Length: 453
Ligand SMILES: CC(=O)SCCNC(=O)CCNC(=O)[C@H](O)C(C)(C)COP(=O)(O)OP(=O)(O)OC[C@H]1O[C@@H](n2cnc3c(N)ncnc32)[C@H](O)[C@@H]1OP(=O)(O)O
Image 1 (cartoon, rainbow, N blue to C red):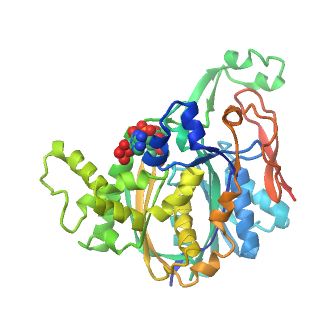
Image 2 (cartoon, rainbow, N blue to C red):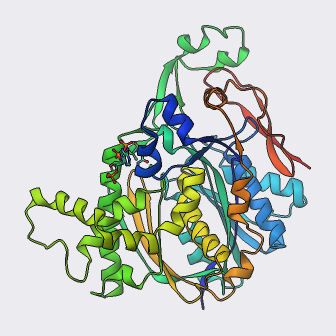
Image 3 (cartoon, helix red, strand yellow):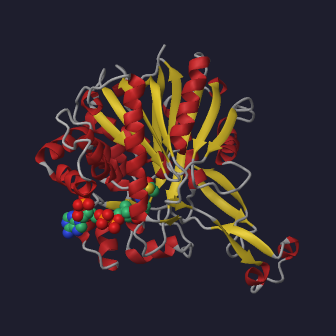
């Protein structure tokens, strides 16, 4: 029996800052961002959007477009690193919003939970749901990935920001992609990118708010966390490269093959924190697993990086990138980083590209190289199913991305600093963040959402 993804929906922030505008404002050469990293637009949440809103919108679309009967859904597992509460998971918010829209107790027997491991949490959720459906072939699960990839102003992560969610129905005999048995993992506990709690004294926080009785219950110090990560960009690239390489070669061992694995993959879907990350990182694996061994086992360490760089710039590698990686990059260039959703947006981008250009990919294999900082990589593969086109009929990814509203630099900064009061875009047929109760400087209160017709 086959198990995999039967349907996919998405919701991204449909306002964006052109990368050129950011480059000019920050005094960065636009060509570096456009041609070096493959960036065109950067999306970010409007005033009424957050990770719950994106997740709820993607999930609502999945349910409506595929006429899903909620009583058939046994699990909704969420991959996210944008949790808004240390106890109440985003999946708990999603349950209440879906019941608000589709009927009270419609998900009363559904198991829900969030998975957090930086950008790989969605893949962890998927793997769990696949295992569950394999054991219970008549049952169905949904995976939601939702995040706001927010970086500090003026940081090297700033131009890679993005926001949005995907929702995927996991079933037996799926219409889009069926995953094979083998999943290889490579893990190492490192600090390449993380979001630590910070300690702040009660005194510092209450200076301007001393009349609020809420503060009476505070300890002398409290811990808060900021949406933006602490990170070391070049080190995170090294960790990405090390983990994916190790997982790739473990995957070959699991498959018990000496064949050059990527040759059998029609498309390669990687975690894309920005559009060209995959092509910049894969050249090492490409060189090591090449049939003619471009890099031999006994090459001098000093020559190793130079050789990998050379391979990355060769015509042969460029052709390989155009054929196997570029379709996944298209949406990333127009959206930015989606953290847990990036790899799945790469899958959707690839399929939407083949759909729009009327190319049949049923029966071909796609290879997946996932990465999450902290750090972990998983490598797995799947086969595209005969009904993939009809299953994606309503998705219209690139048409939808064209509708995004452009904003200027001042609006971008005011949204980033949470100073903007009025939404840029008028919401329609979507969930919105209605209000946050007990919001005080640096602390976040209970959030309430509503559906806007
Ligand atoms: C969150 C995760 O997934 S972890 C893995 C990735 N890490 C992150 O995303 C963390 C946040 N991001 C960052 O810190 C940064 O954006 C990074 C590390 C990804 C990129 O760092 P930067 O210092 O901005 O860029 P970097 O110098 O590495 O690369 C710039 C590229 O543009 C190229 N470039 C520079 N100028 C130009 C130009 N004028 N024309 C064309 N290309 C140019 C460079 O040659 C280089 O490409 P190459 O190495 O393929 O030759």
